[in-house]
Length: 227
Image (tube, rainbow, N blue to C red; front, side):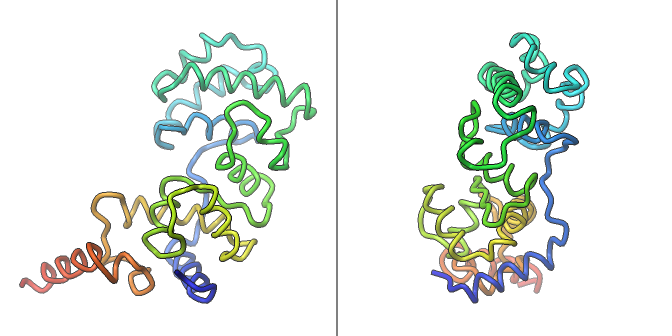
C-alpha cells in the first residue's frame, strides 16, 4: 500500500499531466450539474452533453422541471438509458429543492443524500465542484480501477475507497485528484489495454511494476526498439 509521501507524488505527477482538472459534464446552473450527473449513471458524459442542451432549453428553470410531465422529460433523455427512473428522479429532485432548500442545491452530504437518485458519488461531486468542499472524494469506475492498480487501496468497495483516499489525499486536492483519475483512465489507464509504457505514474504503480502491467510495458518497449 502507498504511503502519504507516495500519494503526494502521484498527485503531483497527475497535476503536471492534467493541469486542467474539470468535470467533463457541461452545465451553467447548480441543478443542471446535479441532473447531468444523474443522467450520466450507466451512460457516458459525452452522450449526456449531447442531450442536455435541448433538455435545459425545454426546461429553462428549476420550476419548469418541477412541473414537468415525466413522459415529456423521458423523450429528451431516452438515449441515456434507464430514462424512466432518471426522469422521475430529476422531477422529484426539482420539487424537493424548491420545497425544502429555497431553490438551491443543498451543500451538505446529509441533505444531498435525501434527494431522489443521489448517492455518495453524486453528492461528493456536487460538494467538490459546486461548493469546493475539502475532502470530497468521487469514487467512480475510474477511481476504483486506478486506485487499486496504483496500490492506493486494496478493495473494490466504494465506501471503503472513499474513506482510504480521504486519509491519504490532501483535503484541498481530493476533488481535482478524482477528476484527474478520470482523465488518466480514459487517456492511458483504460480497463482493457492500459498503456503502462506511456504512463506518467509507471514508477509508482503496483500494476505497472508487476504482473500484466510489467509485461505490457516490456511489449511496448520492444515494439519501439524494433525487437
